[in-house]
Length: 79
Image 1 (tube, rainbow, N blue to C red):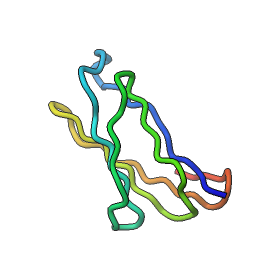
Image 2: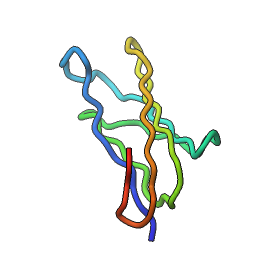
Image 3: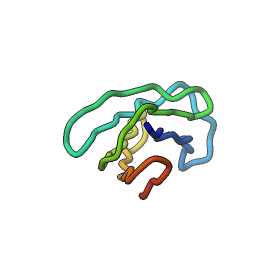
């Protein structure tokens, strides 16, 4: 059964987001796909299977952020 990695981007200076952030997904070191966050910072990568993933967030004017996420089985996520 597929899992989803989803989140909400919050800016470090607590200002409202102006535009979207680019959110990239990698499995191990292989690029999978990218999405744009919505105006509230929400993003989602549905239909993922167990494995080790990296989520990288890029937004103009801010430092790039990376988070590692392990999907270990349906409904079981470690980070």
